Amino acid sequence: MLSLGETIRKLREEKELPLRTVAAYLDIDQAILSKIERGLRKPSRDLVTKLAAYFNVPEKELMLAFLADKVLYEVADEEMGLEALKVAEEKLKIYVAKNEKQ
Amino acid sequence: MLSLGETIRKLREEKELPLRTVAAYLDIDQAILSKIERGLRKPSRDLVTKLAAYFNVPEKELMLAFLADKVLYEVADEEMGLEALKVAEEKLKIYVAKNEKQ
DNA sequence: ATATTTTTGACTAATTTTGTCAAAAATACT
DNA sequence: AGTATTTTTGACAAAATTAGTCAAAAATAT
Image 1: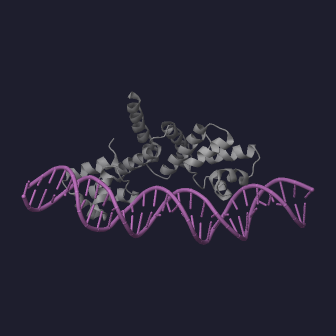
Image 2: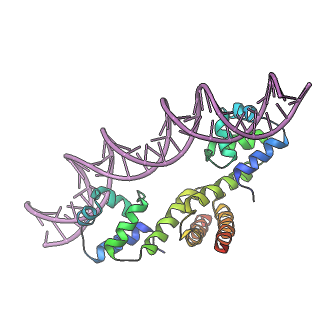
């Protein structure tokens, strides 16, 4: 699965749009968009929504990449990273199951 | 598995120490420690290390709880949370495997 | 070689996180 | 019950991180 940055760069290049154009729509500086596409900056949640609307792709698709990137960033370079993800996953499963009951 | 806050509250109560005492050692205000124990604040990574030293438990143990909490916090209330964790886990596995080769 | 697009990096603004403080609430001890 | 101790609360301040601007340099396309 592609990172969010790779995904939106691909979408943008498919449409042959310059950073300038997309950045203008998103109302951000093109420098930021450039950095986001290359993974040097994390976009805000809000931007992800705007990007999905702009490129006409399901928001969930981009949001999944966005969240995965964010999580990965948190545990990267951590010795216990993988284990921590597993623990978090188990806990989240329990949490989700509880809330489904209601 | 207990959250980091629950873990350190348990450790502290076992030794029958007041917040004041532990907070003084950690060089933070007792209000913060109170909030950390109840999960209202996230401790810094640094504090986790200090806590492990103070309570004489393996740092990895607390660090695992700390990281799991942190990750959980990132994806809680996100519709795609669980899926995002799975994606992140897969990606991290690949990343770890690559680095092991060297 | 000129025009266009992308990247870079220094700088500022905004937001989030981390912490302090003092008082209120809760708990424990005579 | 009354007092002392501990814990919690919430308003506030400081510090750190993140998001953004801008202009120039570098890369790419025409």
